[in-house]
Image (cartoon, rainbow, N blue to C red):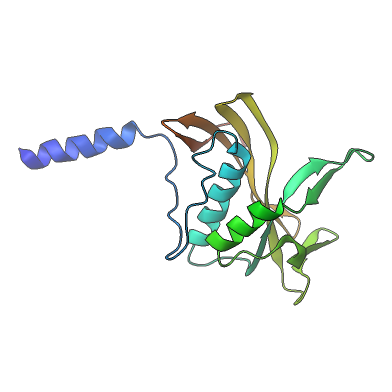
Length: 174
């Protein structure tokens, strides 16, 4: 009877948790605090996507950088820019496998490491908007060699932290 009760509680608790799990920092790394700050939803999503990538056993890119995107004022074309220095430093401390943005450079549709020329990936968040200060949506992921590894996510600030889940866009492939 006790086993049935514990199994039932476990099943019910997973049904009530639609949000994706946070990835724990690597040993001797630290939490950055983006998840707990209502003012940093974009950075919480960037941190989540980086953590998911670095949790993989077999990573397709040995060189990974992070950037922020901003629409170009003169051209109207979205530009990849370095993160604020304190943000980049915090991410570099949390993710030892992350490289500074200056190490990744785009060559046509490819992204390569500036020093070695090996294929690289640039993580970013784009088309990000907040319907309210505590409810946001946007694409988070990476760009590498003409490929986009972005997923659309909804973020809600609940119980003192950003909670992230995939957002179903209702796209039907035929």
